[in-house]
Structure formats: structure tokens, C-alpha cells
Amino acid sequence: MKGEARDIGYNNLKPYKSLILAQVNEDLTSEIVVKPLIRDFKRLNIDGNSEALNGDEPDNAFIYGKTGVGKTATVKYVLLELDQEVKNSKAPVKSAFVNCNQINTTTKILKRICNVIAPEVEVPSTGIATSEYYQRLWDVLNEFKGIIIVVLDEVDKLEDDNILYNLPRARENLDITDGFVSILGISNDLTYKERLDARTLSSFGDKEFVFAPYDAHQLREILDERAREGFKEGVLDDAVIPLCAALAAQEHGDARKALMLLRYAGEVAVERGGDAVVESDVREAQKRLESDKIVETVKTLPYHQRLTLYVIASNDSKEIGTNEIYEQYKAMCEESGTTPLSKARISSLISELDMLGLISAKKFNRGRYGRIRLVVSNISKEKVHGLLHD
Image (cartoon, rainbow, N blue to C red; front, side):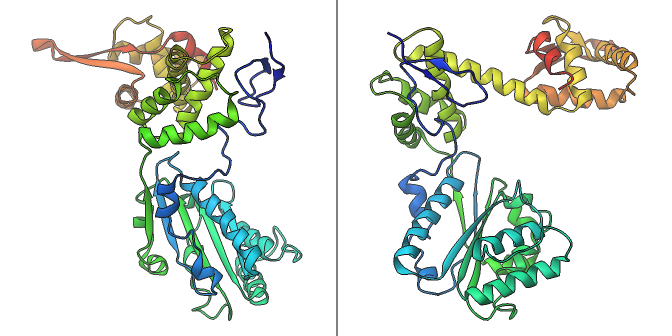
């Protein structure tokens, strides 16, 4: 029996017919605000938001952790809880969420905060000095007479970190006379705080949270919840979610990647015409994810490193020496009118490719003839060729 066509809206995949994937408003792997795990909700100890709701100065804090460990989802959920409490208590508290990967300049962030507090106040996008943007914000805050909690996601992407000093110090510096500005900085970079100057660090104090990677039990909890939204009831074999959770925990502890694995397993089951997702679908999905990871890695390589990889891959899984690699690389550069890099630089790029696992390099001692490094590609020539000019 065939189901209705479902446009799953994921990575531009074509709509397909399936009894497996449910029609849901949000994609299985999309970043939506769901209730975080209890471990994260409690560790991010602002869930009561008592300071802000009582009119006291809330803490500033840094929140660290690898990608996919629940930092952003937890903060967003806490803000939703805060908003609900504010509605009930009528407390003068607002929050502004800023993704610094998209909005990373001081002026744009200040404009964003102004728009959250007083959307009726017009703040120009350009044409005024940074000091004027600050003054507009101080005016808005003095009119608001409340507390604004500013979340800077991917805070390490800021062009200028002076904002981390100026906002928390606004009351102390008499820029505002009522209320407070609190900042929560979220980052994947555990060393970011070490790069800040002493005066900025003093504004934050010592409060920070580190989110560890999820273990298999926690990933299973997350997958169980999202699977209820993304799959029809009864189509997942009992072994599927535990296997997805175990594989993800062993490799990275990343919830997004675990969800991606479950998503791919569903697609594999659809493609084979199955009416349920089984363990073998997860295994096949894992292979596809590995393939996709290689593609994404190659895409990020500099052009000359991709060219070097293509030379190695063109030898059809046969070992090739570094001298021969360099000669073939130079020839390709000449054909394309590109200035080749030095032999030493290409040797360094080959070492990097080896560390990435895209090639395998072995050194052999040839006695009085010295040592030689032989290299073989771990991916096909066709795959590299397709990515060479991306």
C-alpha cells in the first residue's frame, strides 16, 4: 500500500511517497526549540530567572561545548520559559537572541537590541557613528527601565568584543540609570574566553557552563522524542534508535548528527521499498553519512590542496611517490595557467591530507638512497574531480 507524497523539505530532496516518514511541520533534523534534557536545563542555572524577575541584576555567563550538545536549544528554551513568566508577572524583562555568525558587528547588534526593546523606535542601518548607536540604546533602555538579557550565539564570531565590556557595564558607567543589561555568550571555542582582555573578563565574573557531548542514553532520549514527530507510529524497529544513539555516542556525541543518521536510515528504508526502518538501514545510512562527510571536507580544502588530492586520486588506488605527485601537480598548474606552490608546501599539504584521512601515506627506508614517502588515495578520482572546481 502506498502513502501520500510528502515533501520533507530537507537538503532539496525531491518529494517521495512513504508510509515511514510522517508529515510534520518541522524536519526531523531541523533546529527547533524543544524541551532540553534535564541535565542541561538544570546546569544552565538560569531556569528560575529569579534575579531578572525580581528586578535584580542577572548574571553574565559564557556557555561552551562542541556542536550538537544542546547549548543553543537549552538557552532558547529557557528564554521561552522566561517570556512566559514575564507575561504572567508583568515584569519589565526582555530578551534578545543574536546569531553572531549572521550579525557580528557592534552596530547591527545594537540595532537588533533596540528593535527588541522598542520596535516603534526607528534606528537607521547606516549613516551614524557607533557612539550614536550606543546612545540610541541607552535612551531606549532608560525609557524601558527594565532588564534586557542579550544572548550572543557563536560569540567568538564578533568582529569587535568591546560590546562585551560596554553592555554589562552600562549601569556602572551611568549610561543607564535604571535596569540592567545581561549577556550570555555561547561558543564552540573553549579557548575564546582566554583571548579576552582583563577588563572584559571582569564584567563576566567566573560564571560559565561547559556542555559535554551526549552519551548513548541521552542521545536515545533525544531520538525517541524527535522520532515521535518525524516517523509514523510502529515503523521503527526496536533496535534502530539504540543503534543510532550508540554509533553517535561512540563517534562524537552530537545530537544533530545522531538525528541525521536516523533521518538517513528512514530514507534508505524508503528507497528499498520497505515498510519499516531496520538495523541494516542504519548501517547503510552510516556509510552515506561518512561519504557526505568526505565530500564536505574536500569542499573546504584550498584549491591547490584539492589539485594535489586529484593527482593522488588519479592513480587509481596505486601508490605514488611525492616527487611524482609534485611533477604531475606542476603540469596541471601549467595547463590551467596557475602558478604552482613550492615543493615543500605541497609536501606539507600532503601531510595534512593524510591527517584528514583522505589519503594514506607511508614512509620507506631505501638504505643509502634515503627515505621515500608513498601515497595512495582513500577516495575515488571521480568524487574528487567533481569537487575540484567547486
